[in-house]
Length: 253
Image 1 (cartoon, rainbow, N blue to C red):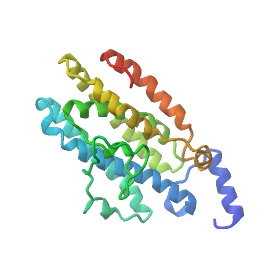
Image 2 (image 1 turned 90 degrees about the horizontal axis):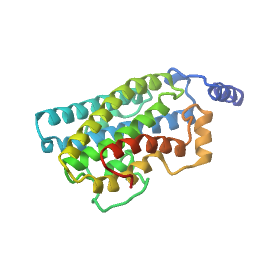
Image 3 (image 1 turned 60 degrees about the vertical axis):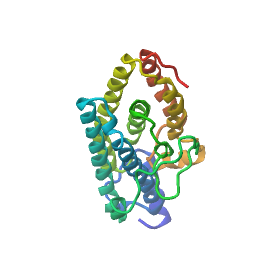
Image 4 (image 1 turned 180 degrees about the horizontal axis):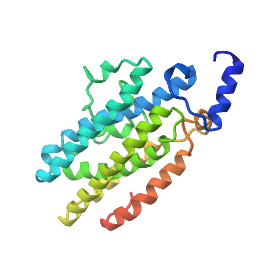
């Protein structure tokens, strides 16, 4: 399928909800965009797991430490599943497990917006450090719900193996989000001061939905790689967060 006619036919097929099932029938432009989606997911999970792993021993008690360790292990497993799909496209998967500082972070005062740092594709929010266990719980509370919203969108991608992976991963991430709510409730009962962390992380998590590029979004929609506007996804996240934060006596930033 290399002729203009074939490309047009494939474009129409994808625009009408068609699915691709293997690297062999994926055109170059589609492949590039698909790999960006997968790399962003993998890099964000590896960076997120590395950052949260550093907080395990700060958790108050065995139950909380066990839950944190489980989250880290499952995020690594999720990353590995999608990384395996990247490998089928010829990606150099070895670079993800050797000689890469996934635990690197910027200064707490940094504000890079949606900018990706030079050496990987992690979402910008995973470049910021935690200050305490409570701070890490708040970040995971906010980002956990954001990830669920994003995966509900991405489980519809037109590359079927990735769509299936994201459907399974969504169930795991929903549990992670529930654990974060449970952890935040415990901290709130202990009168921990959580509002400063909400104020810090809320805008940084919001940026993970993208800054908006209508032209690019339409291109991705035509390939079946996106379906919903970034602003709608972010609004959905905000609507989900408001009652959770209100229950905890917290306000949106």
